[in-house]
Length: 337
Image 1: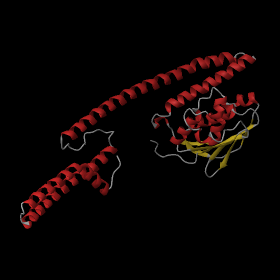
Image 2 (image 1 turned 90 degrees about the horizontal axis):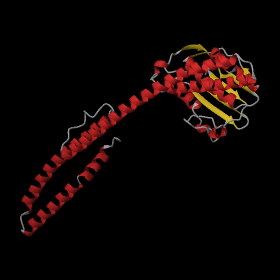
Image 3 (image 1 turned 180 degrees about the vertical axis):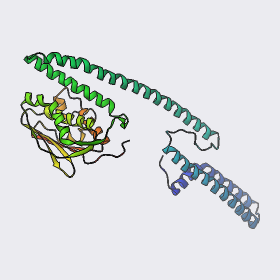
Image 4 (image 1 turned 180 degrees about the horizontal axis):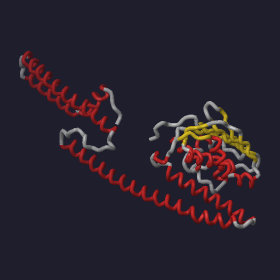
């Protein structure tokens, strides 16, 4: 409900009492006509009319002030409507009471529905979280079995197992990202150690695809959550590896004072018209349509995680030239809601 100015409320009040004003005008015209036909003296008629007008102004002013106050009370109530409807103004008539009963019924129905949806959502998250953790056991078993063999087939299968692990981690990230900040642990970390941790995980992909890595030295500490920042860098590096068939991937600091990490590849690039939407959930763009397995979730999660940490991310790209992802990790919220 938009809070209206005094003049707007006055105009709404006049419109709301339009019938009463018209009826009063008709009565005045009738009385004026009758008095005129009977040739009554003008002075007592004017005096009575004056007293009636003063009385009417007093009552109308009192009624308008009540209307004005009620409007302001309802505007305040709207801002805390999620608390309840106990503070609704007292109904002045049967119609207002009926409207309040309807509002209360709708509020109760909405509250019950939200409660049921919350329970259902919690149960679903608990189930998929349990599933994601349980699926790691057979994945780890498959990896051990395949590592015991040194054939081309086992290498290819290990690559597929690695991709499955990536998707499982993405599922866990997706399930946890909307939870409260209890999962966040903010500390000072060495940025280069975090990046090297991610590179070790993807070393075999660099080797298999014969892609060079250009990692610049950086002496930088950041206040962040290590687990979530590792997750973000993993997603970005995985995208770079996925869409780069030859060339190199460079990781360096663009601006030491602002602590901006740059991950630059020489891959397929992103179409200019797709860039404004790359952080939307489920958006895959031109590259995603070419790669039928793309989910459009990775960058969406990265943006949400970095927003929680008060870090920022920007992407620039050119088709068939490459993509440059910049993560500004120079600041973090002191209190994360």
